Image (cartoon, rainbow, N blue to C red; front, top):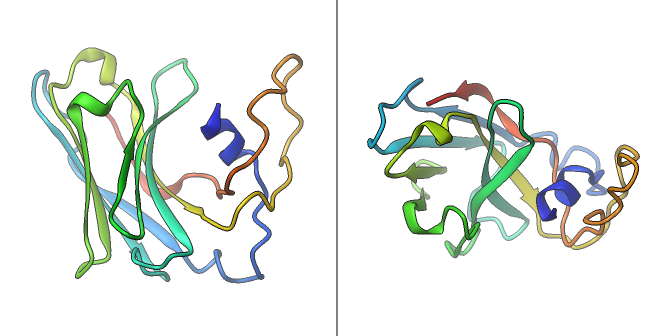
Length: 157
């Protein structure tokens, strides 16, 4: 639900600050079972070492909602969803202003569209972008805001 809250926030940063940041994903279009998926996200218009941003990977499997995989902070600290922690690694290359995802032991259940995303670390200065579906009020509180997933390419397994 944290991801839902992040994605439903309207960024209240000064105008133009986040609109300059662009994310572009690169990697293979498909990966065979048991292989490792490796994706890279190149950031332009902002530094991955800026304390203003966090950098995340999320995915959407066919017919399901978005799933948070993990993220890397400006400091290099990593955070992983418990369901991915044992086979996921997120790293960064500050010289290229890139961060990467490695997902090992791929199965058919990992078939999905993968996105890289940026989120701010400004705190809970956001508002819901849309009204949630009936009965889905939980998770709308924000510990940080985010714009929708960035990137111009979709990657499927």
